Image (cartoon, rainbow over all chains, first blue to last red; front, side):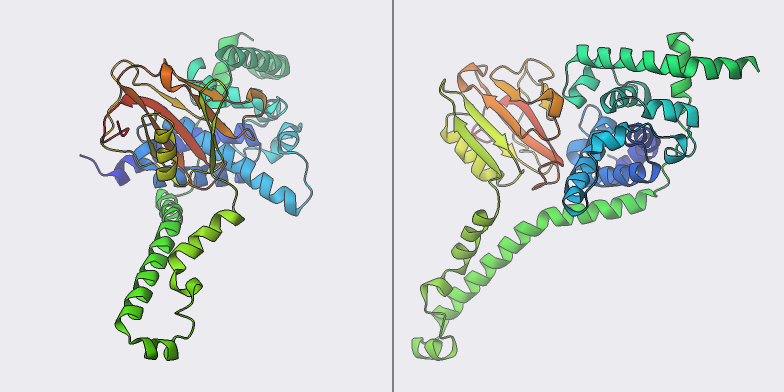
Length: 170
Length: 226
């Protein structure tokens, strides 16, 4: 029987980057995303007996990271007047504020999507979760996931088609 | 650009973002989280031990000397520190959960914090629900999945992953973050011979940082109390 520490270390090694990208797509800031994901993995370790039996532990981490982000926003909004997190997350941010290594055009296009569409993209395409699982994680209906994904893909297609086609021709 | 190309482009971004935090740092932080969860229990144990010691001292010392050296120890307030201190805690904290019987006989449980699992278990069992309640990632080892309905429903997923007769979740899909965790249980709709297992993973006491897992288990005295 393997030790929980080894199991967790292997899970962390295999899932950390995808979880970070998924959260980064949602929150739009690399440092914030890394902080949230680190906290979420720490909580996963603290509850490892339960999390390890979860059908989608990486989704648990992403969900927890996003919840931690919301909790922090709730605390900080009482201290300093800041815009709503959703508005902050929905801002048309440029690539410089986002993931440093992700293609800035793609990141900018992603960050122009509504928050829920970004979460669907993150779970469906980054974590490779199916529609049912994505729906359960986000607490929405599978049909709603499909609708968000369709709208997100349409928006991304219209934003990225010209630049990426030019790139491929050159 | 066709759909597959776009998906490929997006997936190519995987691997371009690297999580640099070492696993040792994560585990170290995880230990701190775990210790923080245990702190309330340790404090309660310490208060209980202090109370027991106070009683032992009051029994061992002669009454005259006791009155002289511990003038306050004979007062009712000082003689029951174990009961007076915990009793004050709820008055300064929000209720962790609420159990309400609805007009149709179903039981609604609203969670705000994942604390006091034992009392919630007693309350629900008193309402006729065969249930095991454990928080903070612990599970009753006596509980076995119910044969044909072993799937669990995960909050904040909000909806059962499979047949979970007798349990429904209340949530607002448009505002899942701020909706209190709530579920409605219809004891009469639970399959014969089954009970519920309610567990949480995440941080106890943190309203936003725990996930509620509900599943059907085989009813047994060791697991669900009946």
